[in-house]
Figure 1: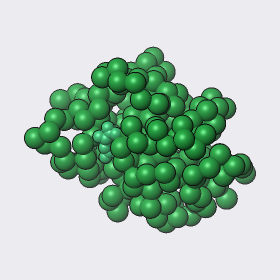
Figure 2: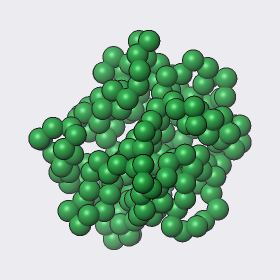
Figure 3: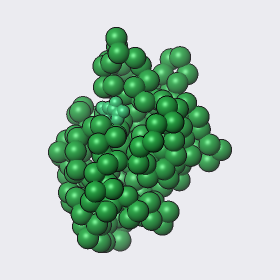
Length: 193
Ligand code: GLN
C-alpha cells in the first residue's frame, strides 16, 4: 500500500484525492509539516501558485517539501503545482517555490483571450489514445534542464508535461477528467513497500 499526500492548502485537491483512490492508493490531505511523516509521494494541485507559495511559508512547509524532493520522494505538480516545483518562472517574480525541478515556466502562458481550452494531447508514454487535456490559465515549460524529459508537447512544440527522475509535472489538469492514466503513470514512479 502506498500513501500519497495531496497538498490541501488551496486549489483542486479533492479531485486528485478521488483519482488516486480510484487507483487504490491511500491518500492524506497535507496542511501541516507533521502530516508528511511516512508519506510515499506527494501531489501538488492546481490553484494559484502565488497563494500556494505564501501558504507553504506560513505553514512551515516550504523547507520540508524542498527536503522531501531532495530525498527523492516522488512529487506530481499540476498547473500551479508545476509552477511551485519549477526552479524559476520567466517573469522572475519573487514568489516562494519548492524549486526542485530544473525547468523554467511561463505562467499564464496562453494569454488572457484563451485562458482556458481543451485538446486531445498525444502522450506516447500513456498509449495510443490521446489524453483530453484541460488547460486553465495554464503555464507551459519554457526551458528544460538536461535531466528533464519532455513527456507531452502541444502541436506548436511547447512542452506541457515533463519528468525529472522523481518529479512529474503537467501544465493541464488530469484530475478534471475521467482518464486516470497520468495518475497511474505517477503511481508507477512510487515504490511499494
Ligand atoms: N495561473 C495560475 C498560476 O499562475 C495557475 C492556474 C491553475 O493552476 N489552474 O498560479
